[in-house]
Image 1 (cartoon, rainbow, N blue to C red):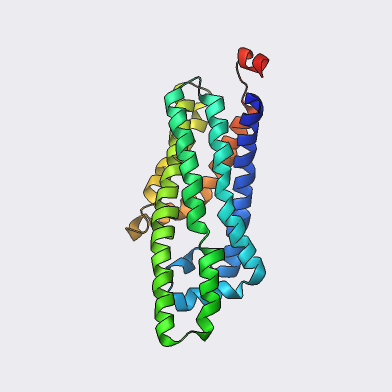
Image 2 (cartoon, helix red, strand yellow):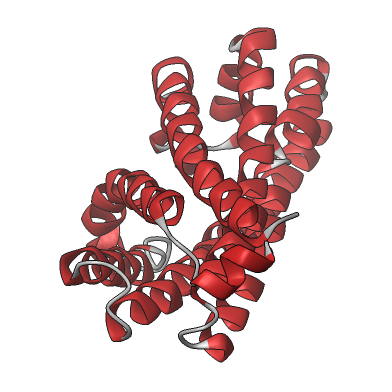
Amino acid sequence: MKPITTVRVGGLALVFGAIAFMAVFSFLAARFDYPAILDGPADTVLPRLLATGTAGRAAWALYAFLPLIWLPAGVGAYCALRRFYPGAMLLAMQWAALAAISMMLGLMRWPSVHWHLAQLQPTATAEQQQVIAALFDGLNTYLGNYMGEFLGELSFNMFFLLSSWTLLRFHATPSWVAVGGLAVACAGFVGMFRNVSAVVAPVAAINNYLLPLWMIVFGVVLLRHRLPDPQVAGA
C-alpha cells in the first residue's frame, strides 16, 4: 500500500471508528443500561443481557471488533509522523496494536461466554448458579477490568500521548490540536483507575465523550496530512 494511502486509511479508521463507537455505546446505554450495569451481580446482569435479544448480541459482537481500528490507525500515524520522531512513533504503533488486542479480548466475553452463561442461568440449580456467578465475576475482573479497561485504555492513551507529543514538538499541526490530544490522553490515564477509586469516576465519564471527539480530530489530521515531496514522488 502506498504511504499516503496508509495514512488516509488510518485517518478514516479513526473517524469511522469513533462514529461506530458512539452509535454502539448509545444503543447499549439505551437497551442495557451500559456502562452502569457492569457493576451489577450475575443474577441481575445476565437476564438483562439475554433480554437484549439478537440485536443486543450483534451490538456486542460489533463492539468487540471495533478495537481493530487501532491497527490501521497506528500504522497510519506512524507513516505520517515517523520522519519527525521515529522512535516515539514506532512505540506508539506498538501501543496501538496492544490496545486492539487487549480491548478486543475484553469485549468479546459479552457476545460469547457471558451470552452462554445468560442462556444457562434460568434453568440452573442453586449450586450451578454459584458457579455461573463465580465465572461471570472472574471473567469481568480479568478480561474486563484488567485486560480490556486497564491495559486497553493504557495502550491507546499511550498511543495518543506519543502521537500528540510528536505533533506538538514538530509543529505538524496547530498547537491547540496537539495540546488537546495530550489533555485527552492525560484524562484517560486518570479515568482508567475508576475501578480502584470512585473519585476518578467523573473524569472517566467525561472521557467517554472526549475520546471519540479526539479520535475524529486526529483522524482528520491524518486525512489532511501531506507527505514530503520525495515520499509523495516515491509513492
